[in-house]
Length: 501
Image 1 (cartoon, rainbow, N blue to C red):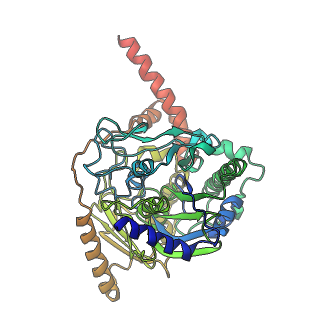
Image 2: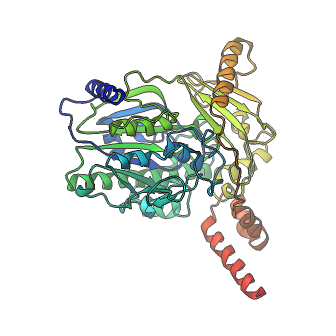
Image 3: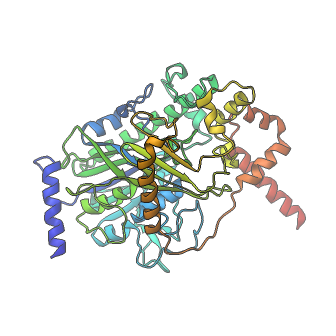
């Protein structure tokens, strides 16, 4: 009876949101997950960048303005999305930890439910960089195989290619090009119209410096390359006659990898694009202002497939006419060698952040990021020379505030912390209580902690010792290439081990 009610409710919801020619077949679903991006797309108003394919998807469907992830770092965020359950609840909140620990009893990846309902689940695609097969979840899993949560921990059925006989299918495709990588310069060099650094518009907390402008331009070059990959996937769907009945969901896995972005609970780290397009199903030109969590996307996918959303999921289908979310609860914990504990609430108007370890600064000199954030290196030098203004110097504060409160309508760049303003005492108290209440609700079902010490820590120290001139170039804002030196370091270790045998 409950299932019949759900199906009836879904039909009513779709009648309100979708066009008259609704397909009676289960839709195919493609989840495009671009890495490390904010709402830095042309249709969201980002200057200097051209993203025609994403623009068309947005024009032909829904574009959400208030989607937030539950963690600003890839693996905890992806773990939450893979289960539809907040990463704290499933003890997956520490970056790349607990990879040997099964999910808590009763918790399943959402692909388990899709496969039971007859969906072919596919990871990756042949049209995108590195095949788009990244999973990166903080629990025991394998890419391909069956799932029972114990001996069998496979998430998908196959890789790369969706065919007519796979229908209905679900495909999760990672668009890695936007992730910081040694390929950024090559992508820019190959572009027929590289983004002009003079045309980019920087946030006011970033110094207006040629290196900073060029780094931002290179980021937008990757966005344009990624948009081309989206076009190739759409073209493939059309050639195979599957485009009309395929739901395409486009998001970022977390915010852009730059100052106050990836790794931080501020808007550049949490606030991501969400575009949903379905030619057979969704009305065009819808701009949606509802507050949405990334775990809600997981629940919505099950809803689209006609599957009842499991009670353990903390996400809710935003297709449900009764969907309502006041805020998104997000958390930041271990990231590589930097142990942190911060919590936040994002609403359509306010951002509340509680820093339980204020002694850990925002600029914590994390080894991996030292290779990939030229803006940080340049701005450190400018700060030393006393050439940063108050907004630009904020990121380099020695400590974080214990609490932060921002009015996102009047202060979208989160420069004016209202936590100590008497007139905001009531709002601060409410959000503080809400944050504590939901943190208790999301308490981990297991407290196992198996962290992994990243090789980047040793690699950075090795570069300082073996290649001091190159390290000096890095401090001056040049990306010397992490993967290059990681390979060289590994070769030296192998050589040394062979010598010691």
